[in-house]
Length: 153
Image (cartoon, rainbow, N blue to C red; front, side):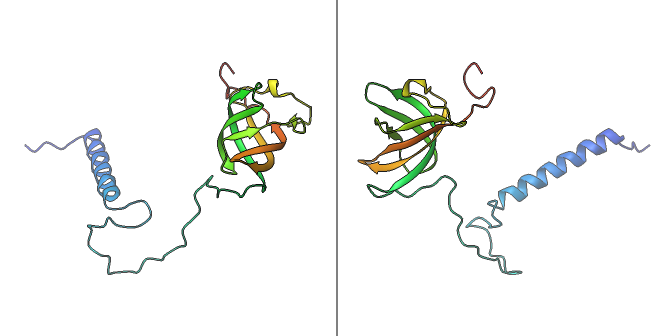
């Protein structure tokens, strides 16, 4: 007598086959529709070539004295040296912001803040000019925090 597999067995076999097919396809494709270099050439159709897309968050090094903007996360605040170290998210390619007496520090709602009010993990937008590889800030805006985004939040 021939035993007929049950529905669960057939379903499990189909899942295994689909998973295996997906792995094979992934191994033969780099995610951009291009086969690996050692794969045979595709002669059945021509592939369209698109212009390269810019890298997200990439920034050119600005010239000294150029007015720029940078968005980043505060890493450290040095009130003694009047500067802020940041982890840049976008904008000018700088990781240090110099604070002068003319720098306006404000919350997103416009309330005036002091350098000592900034904390690591604050998200800021700073505008100013490049001087000696750092951004000398004219305005620093501290963005509103997202609940749970900061330690203990």
